[in-house]
Image (cartoon, rainbow, N blue to C red; front, side, top):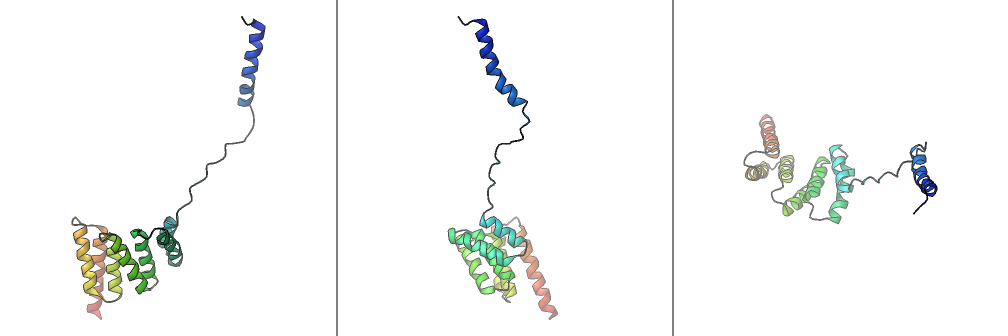
Length: 159
C-alpha cells in the first residue's frame, strides 16, 4: 500500500505542470497549415476574367501541356486568343476542346462567336443548332450566341 504522503506528492507533481501551462502567458500558436496553392488552371481562369489574356495563355498552356485532354483549358485558350484578335490559334483551340468534348457548351458558343468575327454566319448558326441540341431546355450559351447572331445580322443590314 502507498503511503498517504507519497500519494499526495505524486498527485501534486502530476497536476502542477498542466496547471502552470494553463496559466501561462505564452502567445505561441501551433504552426499554420500551409494553404493550397491555386492551380495554373484556376489562375488562368482568373486572368481571363480580369482581361489579362496574355497571362491567361501562358498559364493555360502549362495546363494543356500537362493534360492535353482538358477541354475547359482549351476553351479558355481559344477565348483568350479570340479576345486578342488571334483568330487562327483561337479556332485551333476551340477545335481541340470540341474534339475532346463535342458537347462543350462554352466552346460551341465561343466558336460560334469566332465565326461571326470572321464573317462566317452559317458556321455560327451551326454552332447555335448544336447548342440547341445540347440543351433543349435552353441554356445561357445558346441565349448568348443567339443574341450575338442577331446583333451580327442587324449590323449587316445597316452596312
